[in-house]
Image (tube, rainbow, N blue to C red):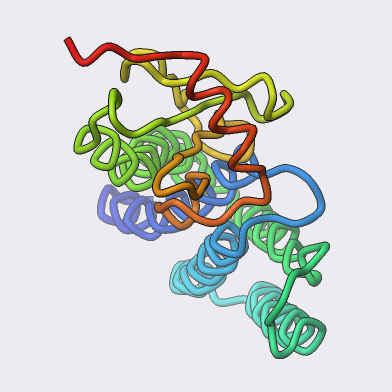
Length: 237
């Protein structure tokens, strides 16, 4: 391969690497049987460019097997999208699983591995792009998910508005009042394992939803939250 071919192969590999990293980051952040709808969308949107840019590698060597293989994955993406939408149509109310949408993880990863297998002479660029993309995706995902949270917290007076936090697995009764922003540690990867942050305002309690990047409703009692808030008094000095 000439240097031009190497450069072109790496250029085609970058969006595949970015998309694969998005899937990897999403898998680190989710847990349980029902993922956040935004996480499911991220996986779907990541699967599409993996498949799309897989066609570009056919420019190096046209093969019926490669072409039909990528077309098969395109068809699987379409079927997965159709199945998920038909199963959860019209998509209102609570859901207790992912409606089959997690299948895009398997389709995306399988398509990624197939592209590497069909392009062994250029596979090093696909793998390199994936490794280099993951730190970038992690950095951008952290900023995307956390910036609205920190903006909300920095604009709030912690002595006047009560914010509580607890670990993802602990009971709400074990939550503690946030006295300082230094008390909060979101971690590198933000997801279902991240600390739960609650806001008590106007006798209403809400929880920070990382995927939606805003406070949303929660079923916890405002009475319990008030007791915890009163237990930890924050000085305004």
